[in-house]
Image (cartoon, rainbow, N blue to C red):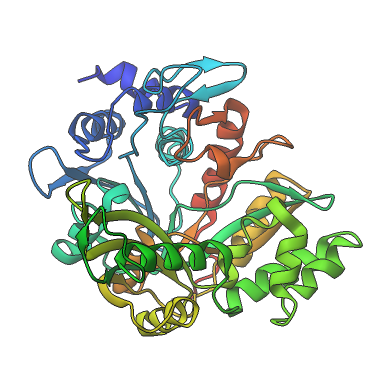
Length: 446
């Protein structure tokens, strides 16, 4: 355990992030215990009450409460401390060293999402140090297991300890807030909604036999046709209200001809053509306008000289809000044929419509931090712990504000080698979060 004095002085986001990265919380297995214990020490050294809730051994979750003035509802501030593997990747600096080099903090989790957790902790410790009180209590939750589905983290907390979040209407978490330069403007996508997990298994069957006697129309051929269809064709265009608002806001602030091109994305007859013409620049937009499905695991065959009669293909499907698993199955079959047997293995639904009441406050905070900022609502193509907290009626805003240098491809660094975050962006983000925490509740008259 870090001593009380040194813990309390550890309130700069860069320093906190370096120490968080040095805990190897690769999930699986996670082993978040020592990392959570470090965070617990920071808050307790500052005189903040904490509670730990353990799903199972070495898979804890921490809740710390910063008392407010009871002028508004509590605000939930939540983030996960587990990370994905760095194995098989070639790194410039060791992924669990937390090295500060070239103006960046390098390491697994620098962006997803120990960097965000460090900014949150830094802002909260500064509130305590300065003796101020936010309008309402701030409930900080450091969570385990997000990268493997959240069963031992947010899901466990929501299902077993919902009283810890009593009265909360809004939360701040991942994924959003990093600047994105497009068409001469600096946009900050703020997550207000996310797609739904829809994991599936497709079973393909056909005649089997001896490898020396080739078979046409077998399970391997069916697999090839399915993979080819998923690789070369798009599922139908689906324009949700959040995606529409995001694109319309970007078009409103972008320069010509980008503003004209963006507007054409909202015409379903032109959407896919415009995405094609935009190329890599449309990478963040493409999954927001369709249900998506990615083949990820193939199981079939056991011997080199035996043609398998059955192959099972695992599919990672993601649904836009309002869409259903059966609709996705129908879309896949429309591309690849009706003979495929598709089974849903996991579906995590979420709310269809976000509560946007706090968005204007986030806009104000961003404008104060960066006068050139344009906040846009983001439909997240993946999922976060927000889907679990939504079951308690909590609207999460993915807001980890980072003012990034032009040309830094934020999305390509997440879960990839050489994940890193600019040190000055961490300072920017901690300052913006501090402003938000001290002003939260102005949008809520309840």
